[in-house]
Figure 1: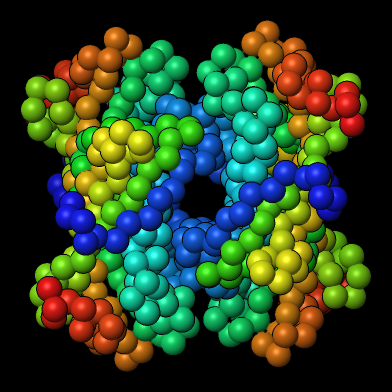
Figure 2: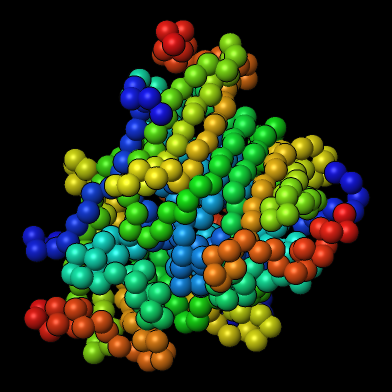
Amino acid sequence: MDQSCFSIEMAVRDYECDMQGVVNNAVYQHYLEHARHEYLKSIGIDYAALTAQGINMFVTRVEIDYKLSLISGDRFVVELVPERVSPLRIGFRQQICRLPDRKTAIRALVTGTVLNAKGRPQLPKELDVLLQQT
Amino acid sequence: MDQSCFSIEMAVRDYECDMQGVVNNAVYQHYLEHARHEYLKSIGIDYAALTAQGINMFVTRVEIDYKLSLISGDRFVVELVPERVSPLRIGFRQQICRLPDRKTAIRALVTGTVLNAKGRPQLPKELDVLLQQT
Amino acid sequence: MDQSCFSIEMAVRDYECDMQGVVNNAVYQHYLEHARHEYLKSIGIDYAALTAQGINMFVTRVEIDYKLSLISGDRFVVELVPERVSPLRIGFRQQICRLPDRKTAIRALVTGTVLNAKGRPQLPKELDVLLQQT
Amino acid sequence: MDQSCFSIEMAVRDYECDMQGVVNNAVYQHYLEHARHEYLKSIGIDYAALTAQGINMFVTRVEIDYKLSLISGDRFVVELVPERVSPLRIGFRQQICRLPDRKTAIRALVTGTVLNAKGRPQLPKELDVLLQQT
């Protein structure tokens, strides 16, 4: 991913590993979600505050390619680049790279939208402005 | 999905819902995984027994379209049709339908492979035979 | 436990097992919570509906003795007997027994209270009546 | 807790919150487990490596007092003091304090033991030595 992307560093916790001794497939979605919410916070959008106001961000589609399994003790970085998919849809290109070798663990494209308190699609202003610039 | 598919009925548990009051996105992967493992068991393949023998089934790609959010109290059915993607790859077309109205909550395509104890791709015999018939 | 207790039957799902190949300790709290919510529903109290009204049931203390580890494929029953601990506290004596041998997997005592929409302790009427009878 | 205790700092992730908008009760057990494993690593004991050798650390009892609910965005510290409960049992006094106000979210006592590859109780040498000093 390009160098302008948002990224956070995390580490595998043992309870996230399943009987194969690797991080369970579903847990990567948690990592990806956490990175998206931290990204949103970094541009001034608080997911929990929006939810409390009745504004709900929804994921409409997820594609994940699993390349390499993370295991106990692994550190990794979750990277994210936002992109506009349509006037009311946002895409997040995300990847998780193991550290320190930076081998790709997963690549993902997560698409979402936002429903305002009346249940109508409406991107938060901060995100709308940001995506118009790109 | 056609009538020959495998299906199991489940119900939302409250701890699976997040602050939006709906089932968290990652939880659907748990539902899908559980249905795949029950399907495998139904054709004589025990995931845990394979894992204990060093034979690891891996998901290589997941695509999920989220159509409708399940909430507390919802019952639903997870359906599955297996298909051969390539000599060493299996695909599972899966969908989750809310009950009793059978509205589609998610549609998914999960692709996987199996590595034997030597780390080489090899489908379990039962699955290989089954997929040759279809 | 006595024969008048509430019980539900469940089964281990593979994603609930950790790298030791047994159900992760924290998952038993999910089983216990699910049984409590099903019990409440059986006496006319809907946890999600209460939450939506701003009435929050809170666990204040949990004690769990782990006796035997559940593994992939295990079926089990979660049993529950409610008891009044104080005017505003409810206790749930719970145990999880493996099936079909009924060996005890865990024994637990979960204590909770309920805060109404004004943040003041207040047991739901249905529970209050029930506990006065015992 | 005294100042010689082990501690790690963490933060709530949104997917850990349930429909009440607070961290789900079971998730605190994950936080506690993660802190114990990090503590063990700090004294030279690798949980995953032990597990791979057939040496299993087991929790035998958990007591948790819930004092204050953590919510989205909260940072917190998980603290731990080990103590010998009996020749073959270790206790971990743990607490989770919200940051920066250091209000106690939960207090816990987690007791465990270790079974060696032959299924017999045996504390790892590092832990045994450490607990003899206290």
